[in-house]
Amino acid sequence: GHENIGHENIRVETRGRVGLITLNRPKVLNALNKSTMDELVAAATAFDADPGVGAVVITGSAKAFAAGADIKEMASQSYMDMYAADWFRHWEDLTRLRIPLVAAVSGYALGGGCELAMMCDLVIAADSARFGQPEISLGVLPGMGGTQRLTRAVGKALAMDMILTGRQIDAEEALRAGLVSRVVAAERLLDEALEAAGTIAEKSKPVAMLAKEAVSTAFETGVTHGVQIERRLFHSAFATEDQKEGMAAFVEKRKPEFRHR
Ligand code: CO8
Image (cartoon, rainbow, N blue to C red; front, top):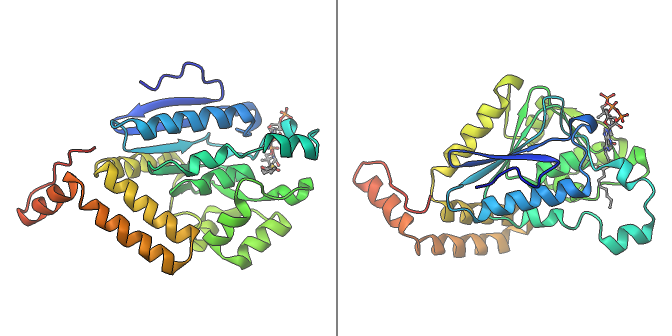
């Protein structure tokens, strides 16, 4: 099981075939300190490896998905401290997981919180969600991928606006800009995210992983190389029993019984 033992900053549970990770530092609006990062990456990595789990939801509280990296933990660090520890490098491990990650965002997703949401594959927002990269006001800049992923997600104009001025955008603007795929009423947020993740988890897990890798490649590389990678990944789906079953079921007009889910 994925018990909560050893976790101080997150809650971990499963809902059917969906893994649910809830950031749980309410007093500091889920500020992302180092141990939160370690626990979250470990929990998501365990779900990735568990054949009984097909997708993961990462969420926070009603008031805050996460209000950024923990400023109190960073405030007195020197350049050498940051460089020697390669501060935040471990977050990259989250982006290397193959299982689909769904961010369910309510309230503040600022700084590292916005960057964490952007490390996920689907972002579903409550109408209360607010996204921003306020680092400039603290005398720093985004350091967990924000300058890269926000620019890819919403384009240069809005990314520059947000990163240089610190302006926050609400859920509707995030939807228009393509930062999130759905906006729902705050009280519906977790159900909507669990349903989306549940839908993914009903598919073949290895094939969902291939599809995630292919779309991530589009996001991270140029189109020509990405299309080549996509074709190879598409070919490799034909090595799975689930491809045989999925296509046979369609031809036979019945529901597929995926073996790897
Ligand atoms: N870090 C630490 N503590 C925080 C953080 C944070 N990011 N955000 C909020 N808190 C704490 C507050 O200090 C406060 O604690 P206390 O009760 O002890 O004073 C508690 O949470 C509640 O916060 P507020 O009283 O401020 O709540 P409000 O409702 O008044 O305001 C805001 C909510 C607007 C979200 C406000 O808390 C805020 O502006 N927070 C900071 C947002 C921010 O600047 N985030 C960016 C952080 S930097 C970052 O993420 C950089 C990542 C990459 C760095 C790269 C380095 C290599």
